[in-house]
Image 1: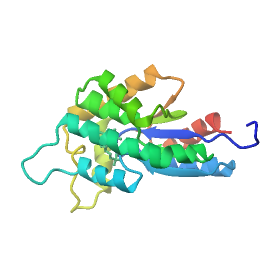
Image 2: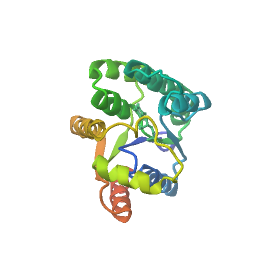
Image 3: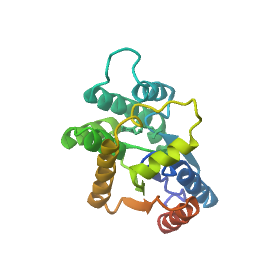
Length: 217
Ligand code: TMP
């Protein structure tokens, strides 16, 4: 960098539950810190007190007979994102701090666009509105069949814990989410790196380290 300051990276991690996104975030954090980049990790929906409240609302099953409609769900995701970007992500990047974010705009394209069949043009417009044009430098997509992701989540979860609204969706929903993620990776090959997350954790770690070496100096 001209002023001697290192570039701040904005890296997002996408993929289903059980793919190993947290381990991937840990590896990227260590990689960046070892090279002298200050870094924060955050997540969506969430990342600020208000956005975490919206996360709670959108993930939990409503108490009474009320359903959360796809349009409501989409706007809650985007409201959380608008707050998160302005309150946390942009200020960090502007002050030279790299940001690793567990899920971002691609999750909206995959879940609300792919899973819920909502109009992709509307989602892209709302993503752009919510982020004010803040786009990740790189996106790591941890790809694995939904069946494998579910098995891992169930194995990890304590016996009394309930699944959330998204985990409770049928396998077909999660298959459509996966296809939408892979379509995004094909559409934006410069930004995306796809990791085969169906392998052992050691192997996934190795792949993430390879990608980090390639992208971050
Ligand atoms: P997770 O962070 O534990 O994976 O939970 C977040 C859930 O929210 C996950 O099922 C994916 C879903 N989601 C969307 O449907 N749209 C979005 O834009 C985001 C960020 C997440």
